[in-house]
Length: 239
Image 1 (tube, rainbow, N blue to C red):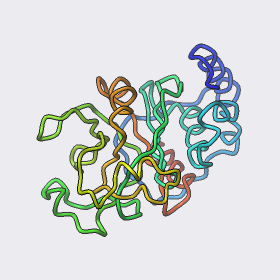
Image 2: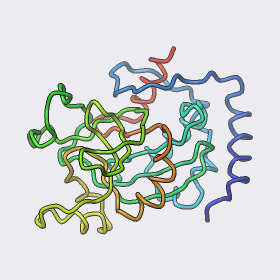
Image 3: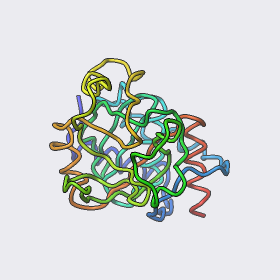
């Protein structure tokens, strides 16, 4: 059962105060996956164990639980709501700025596994992407609400890269997108051109209310290297 907002906030504050008193804030910026290795202090590994054990997070992957501990201990979200996209687990977690979990949902991500962004997307159309380019890049991104060319409200993860969180849309029947979202395994959740696709109801009740009015931070967890390496690179780049 999820903690209520006040109890969870108190637990977060207490845990962080004891574990990382005096930690500096991280700069809010769109930071793609870096290659520099950097060691995350062992003390961070103990932060947030109780938070991650609550409610829906019990079934979260070890990478998602580790990333949550890191975000809350480092305050990397800078007081903004944040999202974790766990490509390997085929799920999305949406949090209030305080760390309160607002919702969890299956998610569709890029057809091709990989953490790299496609170079030159500003000059290309999404429809021109080859199969091997249909990846959902890993990294830390500052999101902002917006609209696509059809006027649909979406959340831009990276406007220049044409990467967004959006509702499930009609697609070729052979893609079976609705069925993929409904399946119990994440193995079939790779089908998009790269965007993060969620059920319509989840977008309207969770994503829109949390991220549809202001900026947020989106953490897309890697699948070609350990999550500790990505977060360590973020920490290294902020020094």
